Image (cartoon, rainbow, N blue to C red; front, side, top):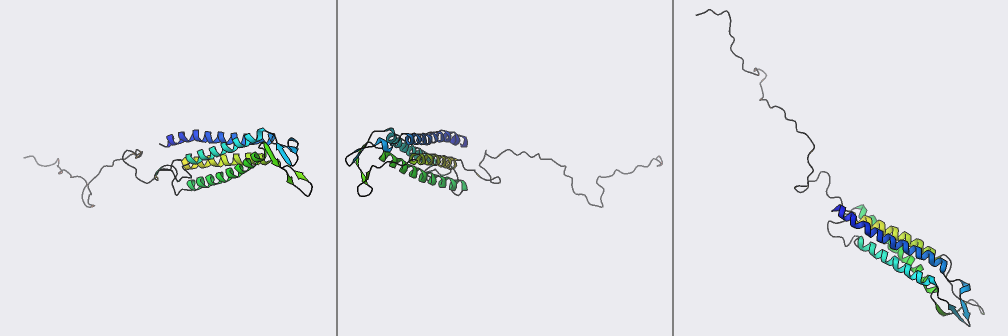
Length: 224
């Protein structure tokens, strides 16, 4: 049973890892493709944002990260709450507590990364938006700052690592019974000790001979 559980965990870990890494890669690419102030055209008091790849990359990275988190949470049994009785780590074990904490932290990191992705996608979306005033006679167009997609990509990797750790801990089979607890029939290991038989002798008194003694026969008796 434990081997089947471990075999089913490996593909889930691979899927979560691929989704999370792909999300981070898209984030790094979006950082290189994002709009710069030179790409934005000013038309009167409107800012014209041209179509660019960073918008689609950010949306794709955000979706992949969300899917990775959902898969990891379902695989871990919804932080251990959806695991069947007797399956996975014991409810009172330290391993389960660490798994739940890792799952919560992974979601926090994923949410922060998603906010960065969403903000970057919003500011890189094609369209026309009004310029903002910076002073009395100065208008400017909003543009995303450098490093936003990089921070989102790094947080995606951290969230994926924590999600994988949580999945492994929460899906690990619990240790059944201690070394001294009896197990059901047919599950007890064979005894390795060798029983040595010793002869059992009846208790003898200190004043008695251990064996009956035959009557003494004298060789010098007179012949009849």
